[in-house]
Picture (cartoon, rainbow, N blue to C red):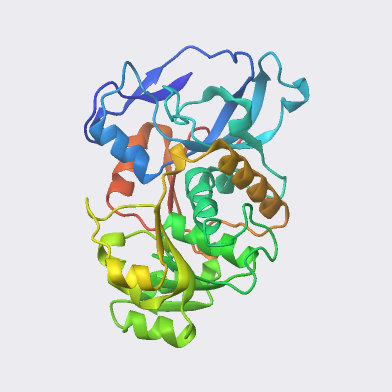
Length: 337
């Protein structure tokens, strides 16, 4: 079978198309015939900075069809359409290959109403967004319809993959969503995702606009750029609010101590890969419910343009992510079946 591998860290050029033997699923595992492989910023950063122990197949997320199961996994799972998450986390087998084995819980059934392209967009962005949206003071452990009713959420960078996921999930859960963007193009994408209020921080006074929409402040901030947005967050939060940081734009963030104390403001950094298993299970369950309800979408009409590359051009796909492609970059591992 065909696979993309790398054995040393570096630029996209270290990714090589290779032939590998067909893997066999072990106990508790499924084997998936991969259709799409989704690329996240952490996939390209890992490739650029970390030399693996042997050959590594990149990319955490993907979608496909279960074609074999190991001991302890119901045979009825063969033929299931699935989406995959964290395939390459502390494992040598990411989704940029025609077949891969992984623990059965990390291959989640995908409803017939959801495309395999959508399935490959879920994984890391949506698990991250779910975690961020469930960490507010007194908030729900798991999202569902009405779980965030009456709450106002600020999503920084609403045109990004996690920002898009946070907007879609927050709206499904009943929140009022404000988001910040940097261009008219991104404003259109954030609106397509479902944000009710959009602030262009390049052309508007972001704090004033957010306060106009939410005079009492926002209860929860999903933050992609804490170094750039620290003061803005302090200026627009409600008393007892939470700022959840899921990415970094600087190595160190200076948090204003006194304003944070006065507001009883919580700053919570998160990393999806190391969050508790129970939180991942809650996120997967919520995403399953949201998918069944048609509340999660992908593609430009959903504010998440898709950029498709063939398997042999995985290096170009990684370069597109590094270059700041707006939307979701997918590798089409196999042609349509």
